[in-house]
Length: 217
Ligand SMILES: C[S@@+](CC[C@H](N)C(=O)[O-])C[C@H]1O[C@@H](n2cnc3c(N)ncnc32)[C@H](O)[C@@H]1O
Figure 1 (cartoon, rainbow, N blue to C red):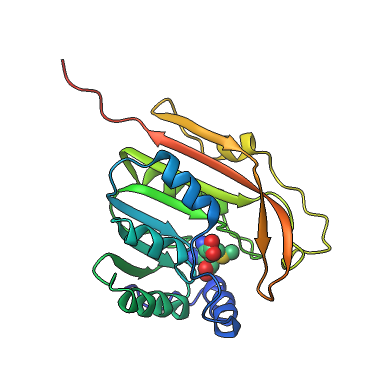
Figure 2 (cartoon, helix red, strand yellow):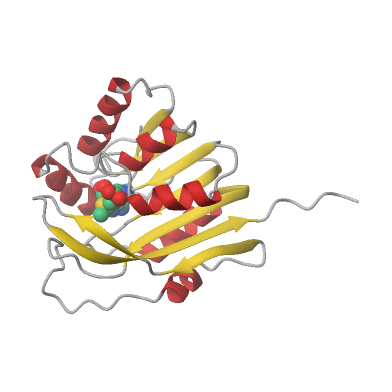
């Protein structure tokens, strides 16, 4: 695991997780479940970018994926490790701490997932997501799920937030001809906040598959 990043992101997200109930975010995102179920082939290696408390990473591991769960918060990752051990999934979930604006896990993955990789801090977010796309192995899947509306319990509640369209999110990833876009839309879902509040929210879903290396003739 890399040493302390000392970054503003680390300070912010450490404070966030120190205050957050450890049970929040331990179940998978509904949309991630739908997207993986619809598009996955054989489970392989997966990178969960900004994994938080690891709901997605643990769900993927339970389905047979070998997951690298990355976050800038050591507190969040310690909770993921504990949950993975408790679920008998420690062998399938490897946590790795990075401020992904500074360092990024090595290698390529059959699935790279960035679910709600949002932060109130100014970071080069599009660059990070393009770096994430480059970490997808041939024939692998890239899943980007973003907020497309402001939930009443969001830090952005009450602000005039402009969201990109799904096409703009896809375009920002700068994927070339070596990719096939499988999904690019803005579904709605019923969501539950940290205090049990209920609301209908909009997500942005982008799924793309990196084409495999063409067979030699
Ligand atoms: C809005 S939360 C989403 C968490 C999780 N993916 C989910 O769907 O519940 C964003 C996550 O990204 C992480 N994060 C934010 N900036 C980061 C950075 N620069 N490097 C690595 N992780 C970061 C945060 O610690 C946090 O866990």
